[in-house]
Length: 77
Length: 266
Image (cartoon, chains in turn purple, blue):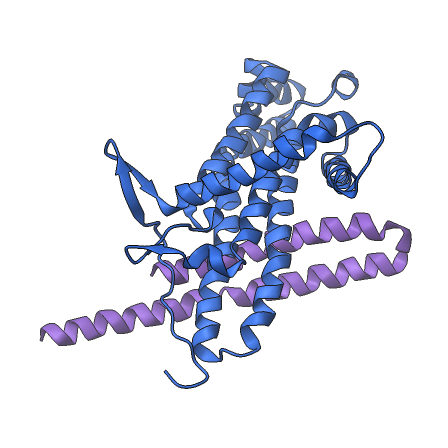
């Protein structure tokens, strides 16, 4: 009986880990959209490459933070 | 473990205590921070002190390039030159500390020196205590600057917009209800200040800690060629996270500052 409960807890933990990693799917879409738009802007006016690129990097890091929260949660669970 | 796998322990979330001084625990993160600070300070003392008006060596050129580059980045983020010049020393200090700490963790010797089976040094930024303290200091600094620059009542008025509600209802009914919505948004800003601390610190911690865990996992899966790709990506991530920490602090700073006098009058 005791072992069965522990098995159930372990199974629930693994399911929760799987669910947290689902959130990375959203940040992937966001980052792809962001970089695509930035490249479009660079294509339209190449003079602004440096300015757009540094802002893009900041935006990507912010979009990535959602996935990072999920990753931290993944390790804590 | 087969031929292609190298086993290793996944690093723990909390730091290890190495010894205690007067019941004050000294963790391996603390030793890591001390090492990074000693490196940066000795570099400043022995190299930067010898700088002159006419550069005699390449080191000075590189250091000045970093400084001017950071000022330009801050000007882009904050939108004003004087703000960038004012913020550059604070943010550059954070940037150098985070950057050196992140890159130091990629040197294999750093994490493998052990004493009593416990690693002596731990990457400072891979410990949530360090990043949380840095983010908290940064946000408190921004709040203090906001109070100093705009006065205490303007600072409070940003969160509790009673005056705007009064002005809105005096104008018309619709403006009054819009002002009430803005009042509630102003209350939410109190929570968002706290959320900034959490997001700023978790982003840095998560990136570096996840990098270290992933190296161990990759070594366990396929020990040849594959981890080196991830480690070389970690060089990029280490620098980018340091830049992002500084740039976001500058962005938060410029958001929470009162508008300059010229705009306030109009």
